[in-house]
Length: 281
Image (tube, rainbow, N blue to C red; front, side, top):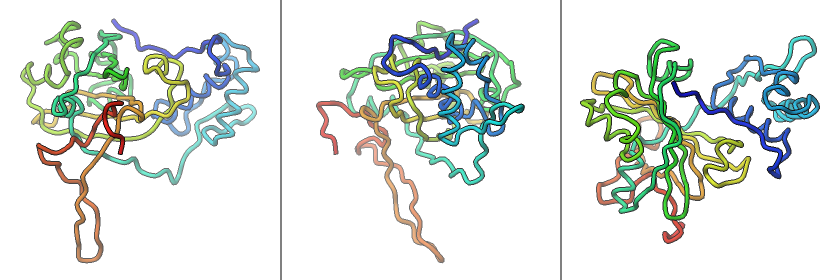
């Protein structure tokens, strides 16, 4: 069984240890792993988890509180701050990254970092509509262009589907292609775009600095019967990857709105990686 990779801190890095812990906790809150009202590990637990002093752990929590991410109170501990007026996430198109790269004639290299099966965490179970603890396939990959790595991808697939292909296939072929080859008929997908910060685990893999901004894309892919067959979380370097959409102006009776439209097959893909030999517009 594969274990989910945990972020760690490294005293050899120029970023202070307390700020490294802050970035890790900040990412867990932004990504929803620590939901509003959830209790954050205290100073003693953080000190033990990251092998740092309580003063370092206390400073990380203080920085979270200063950012308004948590509320600290004596005797009750530290809890994630509720956001009553948090803006809704921006939903982008579902055009596939790999298909777009192929259309542009760009080749990527894949590094498979982790592959195995594990019990579904609550967020994964909710996305795949399986019982918490149900077995799922988990894979972690880095995709790179000639300029270097541009995406960190974590995918989850129900175990009964995932057993139809293995580690070697995952290291060579796009997951959607493997699903379709396994008999899955892809029907639809729901995709959410947000932003996060590179923590001590992801930053070295994407060859960027700790705390650097990253584009976060989560996607739930469903088959033709509406069953979720893939849950993917992608972290992208914004200097090497852009998400583009074509919009049409729709005129209504009481107001005018923008509506996403499908780009023509011969047009430039809506999700395109930046490359040094491409003009940056």
